[in-house]
Image 1 (cartoon, rainbow, N blue to C red):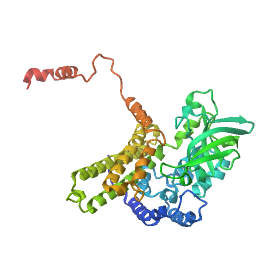
Image 2: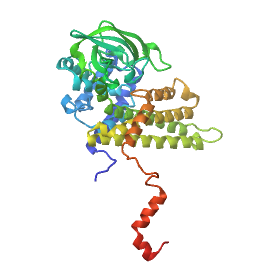
Image 3: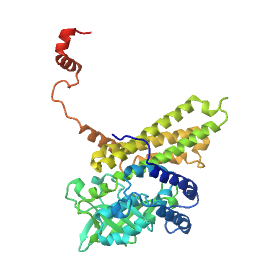
Image 4: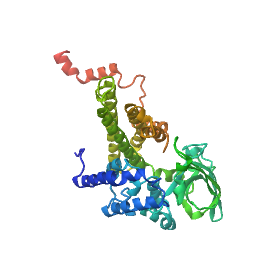
Length: 432
């Protein structure tokens, strides 16, 4: 039986190097570039590209990829530990070649793309020379694929796409988009959709506007509201079979949610560390140090407990994925991770705001933005409520219904069964 909570010493050395590298070389970049995905920014390229080469030389580039794509096949547990470090910096995943949505889009292209698509998009995407967009959510239907109305119709050797998509991440920087559209309207709900590659320069593709989270300007927004106006793409840009878009979309989500959860752990731990530092640094309030106030102590204790619980849930889920090599067996675990993530993030970030007082809600600290981002996490990749329903359904499948009037654990029945089992001993020794 193997059940350990330590890390292989050789891999721990890599993690230690990553920790220092992110702190000393990458985190400062977050404060001087507009966006790490903007490959047209010369300052971004001058700062990030040399660091990407260091990561490649270290053998840690795009570590989420399997050996068939030139990766090391690290597995989800190692990737989770890596992302616990990378999550501290916006630019770090880009420096390590494992940023979303590019990582998931690469998996889709690898599994379902033609050789021509792989040559044109997958290879430069894996090399870090271009970025991509995942264009799925719609204004009227959110992330519910059964409500999508954007259509693609076959016209000779081309698909013609019409419709609108909402919150298409990084469309403004992307060389291509992977979009999910209705191609089989008469099929059952989850067999109506298909996935296809749309080159960003396609005539008729329009970015209506770029949207950011509340408080950010359109200029800095990276979630695009886009429109497809008779956009024509070649027939071979279809990914997977016609009507198979839902299954194609699921290909990118399992491991990605674990990576995102551990990057969230990194951000929560960052906020927690600042809470503790502030509590012991603030000299007096109401005649006592802030760290001596019991309500502050409660906030710190609650935050630490929630972080550790969530972190262990994520790591156990990553371990199960590696052990079973079957995402279907861990659907409930992945949904539980996704459902728990926004609440833990919100709780800790909110307490960080409170402990920092007026400084905490100012734009000179990131805590207010983190509180808002916690709500974003409750919506991205499926709403929290949906994941709770998924987890509950998966869990209840493990049980069998009772056909008796009273349940088998009804105490009178349990007692009668015990008396029957030990009838001889009771007869000989009596009851206590």
